[in-house]
Length: 265
Length: 250
Image (cartoon, rainbow over all chains, first blue to last red; front, side):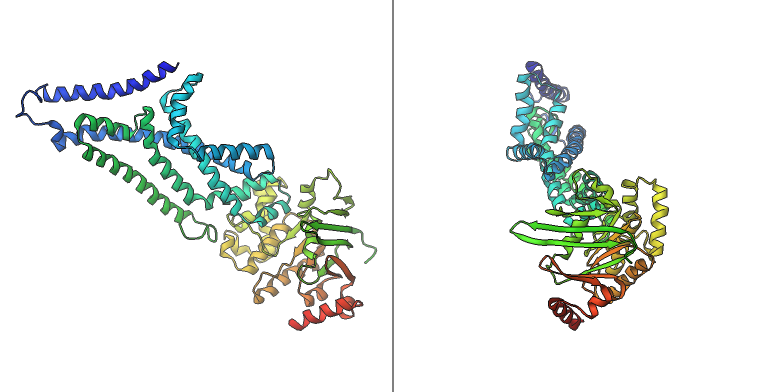
């Protein structure tokens, strides 16, 4: 199993290098080094853009897929763990605290490496896409649980009392009264965490996942145009992140409930 | 009055808080059907604690509470059912800020009383209209004045068709000009025959509306009696002092 995993990584690497090389040789007819009069096609900005941008966008889409799935799983996990931490049930409390402490006190890069390259040793070896999803979900889940927990604790005690005084059970009060408010006031920090997660997804390149950073790396190695390539990469990250926060800010203002969550977003 | 059945009986209620605070120290009283009972006393005298012990937002340290013939302080009592029959109105309103006025009222009808969405809405609208808030149905609590918020809180409790309503200083968080607005609502309820226990600083209101009055200090009942008599001619020296100082301020 373990070797299969490594070979899939190598295969991805291989595909990049082989396609790159093939393209390179096809385009310059193998004459680049032999004839100094020839122009390096990578230097042609039109050629560069046409061949590189689609590959970068492909990498971006892969990264977005992983991050979006991870954010949804992480949110569910965060909600569950945050609820565990506010309960008086001790074992659940310990589980939730241990989880959150473990993943917030170790680097994401280490977590990624452990899951992608360490777990295959004990027979757990999903495709690299799912390695990426699992690692990012667990990581963001830990941060989101902290954010949601602080949101729950920011809801005044009287809200729980009012709900209970009407005869609601603790679970009903939590689900219909406390959590909806807690989640609303945590939208800005959760958005922040989402952006962080997206930017940190560039680390996925290390486990062989073909995200935009990895595509950028391969392109740069082929073309030797590091500055231009990584400028493209950075601009792509920026456009996505910036539009996300702008849209969110607008949506937030539109969905704002008077008297809830303040106006500081 | 004494021929009416006893709806609530609090017997020898004690509540200790950490740090040796004896917030309720052997409190006993009865509330008969359709009676309005006012609990007065200085801040920190334990009146709110007593009220909160009745629906067990605070768990009594010892003592018994009998509500509608059932001892609700016993082990194994379904407190959620008991609470659904006892309305509680908070000093700070505690409306649910993420829900509209209508939803604030329907949420417990659906979850606790298991009414359908339509039934809950019909019931809620009826109660909200009876308190003159029909134009605020779709407003959020953040858009209401303090007086309106407290009326919505009363509507939310009333919609559950409680047998007893508890009011914990319902006007203390209000601007002075809004106090009358909420007291009118309490008067309306009293006239309709709602059984109520009201913790209040409004002595004039208490002597006008309440049938029975209880004066507490340091967790103990100093004096209780027919409201009009007690406020006019208190027997205990401490009650006299308290009433004199309270009425002077107003």
